Structure formats: structure tokens, C-alpha cells
Amino acid sequence: MDTEQLKNDLALAHRLADLADAITLDRFGAADLAVTTKPDMSPVSDADQAVERAIRAEVEKSNPLDAVIGEEYGTTGNSKRLWVVDPIDGTKNYVRGVPVWATLIALIEDGEAVLGFVSAPALARRWWATKNSGAWVQFKENKPKQIKVSSVGVLKDAFFGYSSHDEWVEVGKEKNFSDLTNAVWRTRGFGDFWTHLMVAEGVIDCSSDPILNLWDLASLVVIVQEAGGKVSTIDGTNPLQGSNLVASNGLLHQAVLEKLNN
Image (tube, rainbow, N blue to C red):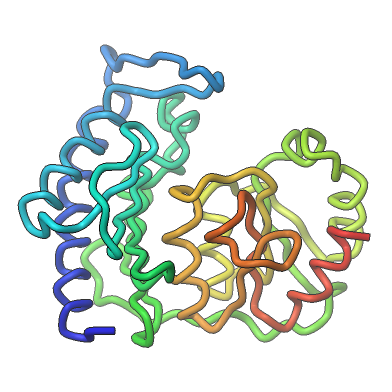
């Protein structure tokens, strides 16, 4: 892994986020925001599409040999370096005026997530991490602060975050979800990217989403790991090869997996 290249990649990620933020903030709450429904019945706005186009164009300009996969326009290119883009994670929030949404950017190299970047401009926050360089958060224009996961070691003292109860019903794990929520100290449905980044910050202790795509989770994987946490699928396998995510401070990981699989 080329450390100098990763520094350049992180600088590019900041530029990509700047481009995305300018578009998303301008269209957030716009009276003429165009929203359509995709075949999976999820919404897509004109801002989602504009952000992904802008990011793809900048990657093509800066690193023309890199491949890109995004939620709205699929995969372009064929390279060991793959940029993964979710232009707006939390589109349902975005179109209703809820400020919990973000642009998610990741870089996967040789199958490993080496960079994760999340920009949530309506929350005035950015999070990022690169392999072996720690995880960071920046609030407004303040100095970036390194983040670490919590040290809570037992479920009865743990704060668990999730997105949607309905999705646990959909995947046939409603009882497992209920068992986990009954075993912990506190639960909250913060939703989407934010839940897992709170694990990285040590604000909560564990989180899980039962239905995700690569662009939903790739950036979160490296941020949680670089904050000292652990990530996996619900089955305990590599989340980059799966369709769901469990994130924890590491100390709680096995206990969470046991509740979700018993």
C-alpha cells in the first residue's frame, strides 16, 4: 500500500465531498426537487444523480485509470482501485427535509477498503479514515479530531443503534432483533450512516443494518476499523462481500452476533 498515494486519495476525497456538498445543500428543501421511484421502490432525486455525475467526472479527471461504482449509474472501468459512491445516503430523509443524510465515498484496493469518507453537510460534519492512519471527525470549520470506539464490554451496559425495525422483519430476524434490543441498556433508531459512525466515535457501542449495498457500507467499514472497532456481516464474514453490517467497539461483537443468530 502506497502511503503517499493514500494521502493524495484523501485529498481527492475532500474535493469530491466539496463538490457533493455544494449540490446537496443547494437542492435540500428546494421546491422544485425532482423525485422519482426506482424499480426497488426506493426514491432517487435529481440531487442524487447530479452528485454522482460530478464525483465520477472528478475521479475521471484526477485518476482516469480508477474504476467507479455508484448507486445511480453502476460500474465504470476495470481496475484494482475501485471508488465506491453513494451520492446521498438517506435519500428518504433528504426528500422530506430531515437533515440526516450524507455523501459516502470509499476506495477499495485489491478487495480491501483503504479509505472511507462521509460528508453530512446538513449536520455540519465530516468523517474520514485511511488505512493505518486512524479515523477522524470534523465539525464545521473546527480542527479535525481523532475518534475512538468505546470501552463498554457487556451488552447490559451497551447502547445499540439501528435504522429500521421493518427491515429486520423483512429478513426474518425480528425475534433476534428484539432479543438484542432487550439485552442492551439503550436503543435508538438514528438510521443510515450516522448510526455506525456513532460507534466509531464511541458515542454508542454497537449497531447493525440487515439490508445494505456495497455503497452503503464500504466507507463505514474502514472508519469503524480505524477507530479501533470491528465490522462484519451478521454471519460474521467480510462485510465487503455481504449485504448487511454489524459494527461494534470490538468488545461486544461476538455477543451481538450471538443475539442476531440464535
